[in-house]
Image 1: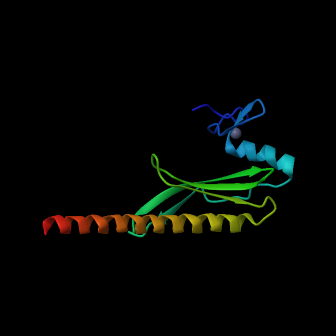
Image 2: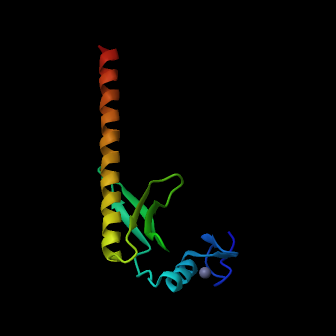
Length: 130
Ligand SMILES: [Zn+2]
Protein backbone atom coordinates (compact mmCIF):
# COMPACT_ATOMS: atom_id res chain seq x y z
CA UNK A 1 0.00 0.00 0.00
CA UNK A 2 1.23 3.48 -0.85
CA UNK A 3 1.66 5.86 2.07
CA UNK A 4 0.04 9.25 2.34
CA UNK A 5 2.23 12.00 0.84
CA UNK A 6 1.49 14.38 3.70
CA UNK A 7 1.86 12.40 6.91
CA UNK A 8 3.87 9.49 5.39
CA UNK A 9 2.09 7.30 7.90
CA UNK A 10 -1.35 6.13 6.84
CA UNK A 11 -2.36 4.34 3.69
CA UNK A 12 -3.57 6.41 0.76
CA UNK A 13 -7.30 6.86 0.64
CA UNK A 14 -7.87 9.38 -2.11
CA UNK A 15 -6.11 11.41 -4.78
CA UNK A 16 -6.66 15.08 -4.08
CA UNK A 17 -5.42 17.44 -6.79
CA UNK A 18 -1.92 16.07 -7.38
CA UNK A 19 -1.49 14.59 -3.92
CA UNK A 20 -2.27 11.14 -2.66
CA UNK A 21 -3.69 11.52 0.82
CA UNK A 22 -4.94 9.37 3.66
CA UNK A 23 -8.45 9.93 4.98
CA UNK A 24 -7.30 12.02 7.96
CA UNK A 25 -5.18 14.36 5.85
CA UNK A 26 -7.92 14.59 3.26
CA UNK A 27 -10.43 15.60 5.91
CA UNK A 28 -7.91 18.15 7.17
CA UNK A 29 -7.73 19.72 3.71
CA UNK A 30 -11.51 19.72 3.46
CA UNK A 31 -11.84 21.36 6.84
CA UNK A 32 -9.84 24.32 5.51
CA UNK A 33 -12.02 24.47 2.42
CA UNK A 34 -15.50 24.06 3.82
CA UNK A 35 -14.93 25.07 7.45
CA UNK A 36 -16.32 21.87 8.90
CA UNK A 37 -14.15 19.48 10.89
CA UNK A 38 -14.72 15.76 11.16
CA UNK A 39 -15.60 15.09 14.78
CA UNK A 40 -14.04 12.01 16.32
CA UNK A 41 -15.80 8.70 15.93
CA UNK A 42 -15.10 5.09 16.82
CA UNK A 43 -12.83 3.21 14.44
CA UNK A 44 -15.06 0.20 14.36
CA UNK A 45 -18.29 -1.31 15.55
CA UNK A 46 -19.63 -4.79 16.12
CA UNK A 47 -23.06 -5.71 14.86
CA UNK A 48 -24.87 -8.86 15.77
CA UNK A 49 -27.07 -10.31 13.06
CA UNK A 50 -30.41 -11.99 13.63
CA UNK A 51 -28.70 -15.30 14.29
CA UNK A 52 -26.49 -13.82 16.98
CA UNK A 53 -23.34 -13.91 14.85
CA UNK A 54 -21.07 -10.91 15.44
CA UNK A 55 -19.82 -8.94 12.45
CA UNK A 56 -16.98 -6.45 12.74
CA UNK A 57 -17.23 -3.23 10.78
CA UNK A 58 -14.70 -0.52 10.08
CA UNK A 59 -16.09 3.02 10.19
CA UNK A 60 -15.06 5.86 7.92
CA UNK A 61 -16.09 9.46 7.67
CA UNK A 62 -15.35 11.74 4.77
CA UNK A 63 -15.94 15.47 4.62
CA UNK A 64 -17.01 16.68 1.21
CA UNK A 65 -18.38 20.00 -0.08
CA UNK A 66 -21.58 18.05 -0.84
CA UNK A 67 -21.97 16.74 2.69
CA UNK A 68 -20.63 14.24 5.14
CA UNK A 69 -20.29 10.67 3.98
CA UNK A 70 -20.03 7.81 6.42
CA UNK A 71 -19.59 4.15 5.72
CA UNK A 72 -19.38 0.93 7.66
CA UNK A 73 -17.38 -1.78 5.92
CA UNK A 74 -17.31 -5.32 7.19
CA UNK A 75 -13.74 -6.38 7.87
CA UNK A 76 -13.85 -9.50 5.72
CA UNK A 77 -13.40 -10.02 2.02
CA UNK A 78 -16.57 -9.15 0.07
CA UNK A 79 -18.40 -8.39 3.29
CA UNK A 80 -21.32 -6.09 3.91
CA UNK A 81 -21.18 -2.35 3.35
CA UNK A 82 -23.50 0.37 4.55
CA UNK A 83 -23.32 4.01 3.54
CA UNK A 84 -25.02 7.16 4.58
CA UNK A 85 -24.84 10.82 3.59
CA UNK A 86 -25.60 13.71 5.86
CA UNK A 87 -25.77 17.46 5.77
CA UNK A 88 -22.39 19.18 5.96
CA UNK A 89 -23.53 21.26 8.92
CA UNK A 90 -25.66 18.55 10.47
CA UNK A 91 -25.06 16.66 13.69
CA UNK A 92 -22.26 14.16 13.03
CA UNK A 93 -23.09 12.17 16.15
CA UNK A 94 -26.64 11.68 14.86
CA UNK A 95 -25.29 10.65 11.49
CA UNK A 96 -23.18 7.96 13.12
CA UNK A 97 -26.20 6.63 15.00
CA UNK A 98 -28.21 6.59 11.76
CA UNK A 99 -25.47 4.63 10.04
CA UNK A 100 -25.35 2.08 12.87
CA UNK A 101 -29.15 1.77 12.81
CA UNK A 102 -29.07 1.24 9.04
CA UNK A 103 -26.39 -1.44 9.37
CA UNK A 104 -28.30 -3.17 12.16
CA UNK A 105 -31.48 -3.15 10.09
CA UNK A 106 -29.57 -4.48 7.10
CA UNK A 107 -28.04 -7.31 9.08
CA UNK A 108 -31.41 -8.26 10.54
CA UNK A 109 -32.97 -8.31 7.06
CA UNK A 110 -30.17 -10.45 5.76
CA UNK A 111 -31.04 -12.97 8.45
CA UNK A 112 -34.70 -12.94 7.38
CA UNK A 113 -33.80 -13.57 3.74
CA UNK A 114 -31.49 -16.45 4.63
CA UNK A 115 -34.04 -17.98 6.93
CA UNK A 116 -36.72 -17.88 4.20
CA UNK A 117 -34.30 -19.49 1.80
CA UNK A 118 -33.65 -22.26 4.27
CA UNK A 119 -37.36 -22.80 4.80
CA UNK A 120 -37.93 -23.08 1.06
CA UNK A 121 -35.15 -25.62 0.85
CA UNK A 122 -36.65 -27.57 3.72
CA UNK A 123 -40.00 -27.67 1.92
CA UNK A 124 -38.35 -28.98 -1.24
CA UNK A 125 -36.54 -31.67 0.73
CA UNK A 126 -39.80 -32.62 2.38
CA UNK A 127 -41.55 -32.93 -0.99
CA UNK A 128 -38.88 -35.11 -2.56
CA UNK A 129 -38.86 -37.30 0.53
CA UNK A 130 -42.60 -37.80 0.24
ZN1 LIG B 1 -1.96 11.45 5.89
